[in-house]
Amino acid sequence: MASPDITPIEPTILSQPVPFGSEDLNSLGVDSEYSDVEEDFNFTTKQKSKRSERGKLLSGRKRRRHARYEDGDEEITHSKVDSLLAGPCKVAEQAEEFVKKVWEAGWRVVHHGSLPDWLRDNEFLHTGHRPPSNSFSTCFKSIFRIHTETGNIWTHLLGMIAFIGIAGYFLSRPSIEIQWQEKAVFSAFFMGAILCLTFSWVFHTVFCHSESVGKLFNKLDYCGIAILTMGSFVPWLYYSFYCRLGPKIAYLTLIFVLGSACIVVSLWDKFSEPQFRAVRAGIFIALGLSGVIPALHYVITYGVFIALGLSGVIPALHYVITDGFYHAVNFAALGWLALMAVLYIVGALIYAIRIPERFFPGKFDIWFQSHQIFHVFVVAAAFVHYHGITQIATYRLTLGDCLESEIQ
Image 1 (cartoon, helix red, strand yellow):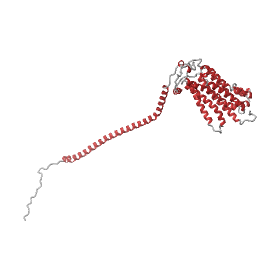
Image 2: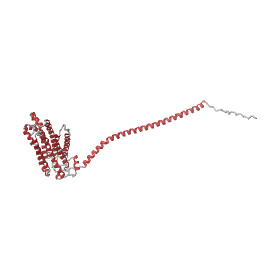
Image 3: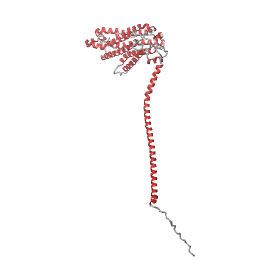
């Protein structure tokens, strides 16, 4: 078997080798390395720039978002403050709107010459009168308007509220403080004062409704004065003649008879007409002066000097009166009764003469006219009387039960 013919392959030798200098080598290796680093640096720089730009964008967004949050917080705070202030503002606006509606829904005031005959009560009051309304709603809205009857309404309306409060406090005291007998006696006075003041302010409110309504409540107004006078005498007579049953019943009967006569006369239609103004004042002055009779009885019993000191005419006499006289002063309380009578009589005279508008026509149309002054005197007299009967009741009850020698 013959062996194969193998021809050796000679390596290929470059006849002219490519020369590589150091520069070429450096450029080859270093340039490629630098280029990679530069590319990495450029890439990193780009990334950093991009990141910085993104950071700026993000920080800008955060700042805007924070600003929005701050604005939102401010808006929320402002909205809370506005919501807190909205309540009182709405209430004030509603109250103002209500007052405007009440004011606009009212009527115009007219001159005295424009009134019908049944509304012409005082010719010295020229302007500010209410014309006939034929509406109770309109009449009661006039309480909050300015006209010739505003002062007359509010003087007795406030007085009524005051006496309702006093009566409620007095009657609600426990029996250990105030017994039921004293509550019953004082109730006559409280009822008279409250009814009188109520009839008065209601009359002055609805007087302009119509002729029939005006006459009806005018009668009730005068009936209230008689009821107040009768009720005022009950506590004074009860405690002044505490141990003398006969005189006590006689004087109470006299007062009730005269008071009832005043009520009957008050219900007479002619009695409410302007030409009977002096007659009206005279009758009620006579009813008030009827208390002089039991007062004279007390003077005859205990002496004129005691009565003089009690009347309050010469207060200096109190300093020269002995202890017995001083106790009598506190017992009878005639000084407070006299002051009450003076207030009633002076007020009635001012009302009858029509001071001050008689001397200054048209100058007191709204305020400080005679009828308003009369109302103030009536309220003051009622308070004075309440103070007086409180003192006399306190003193009488401290003496205890009546002795056999005192009972008549």
